[in-house]
Length: 303
Image (cartoon, rainbow, N blue to C red; front, side, top):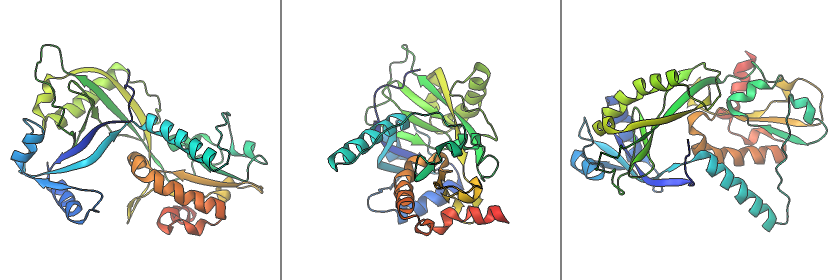
């Protein structure tokens, strides 16, 4: 299934309030958001002007006009290219080395520091297997298109929709619907078999039709999946896990090992800030430069 050649497909995301919890959280976010993160509170009529025939149960929706849908893989490819160009302009080297590593100790003596960011596959490293408080969760997204006999397109000006299910609009007649949450799954294959796709549609279509009844006219054309590495629940929420993991590797070594993980489904939100924090800590050999809330998981692990 082709995703097309783009990084950002469409600007604007609309979130209808479908329950009291969402209503309370989004209302608080709208009142306390940064100026650069605009959230408009709109009523049913305004919401339907943006998305015709949208269902808004509480006569209230939240519109984020500057929000965007991002294709993660192409974004990361572009980010790598940007890093290459930045390094070149500064007279530095930035290289991609492709090497199959079965254990961290294979890197001993080759690098001063290694940052492990393998997502849900971090347990494949024997030094870290079973030692991290990560929760795996498989998610399936479905691709739908409008059949040729349906003339009414999804308008060019209409945003994507975020609710109990989300609709990432790809064009006038194409969208992605997601996502399922299969906790404790270890299946990292992007391939979705027929039975799994059927179960995903059975779960997602009722959620989507609750706010976008027109979804019943769209035809399923394929599905893909991924495995999330979800962080542990804490009093501060579900926060990524960072820090030096030399103690977990458990050997005398010249290389320092660091972990960058547990970003879950919010990786595109957190990665820039957390990457900068990690880089500063690694270069300074000082874990204290990372906020305690992001390294405290190691202390809990020792109890």
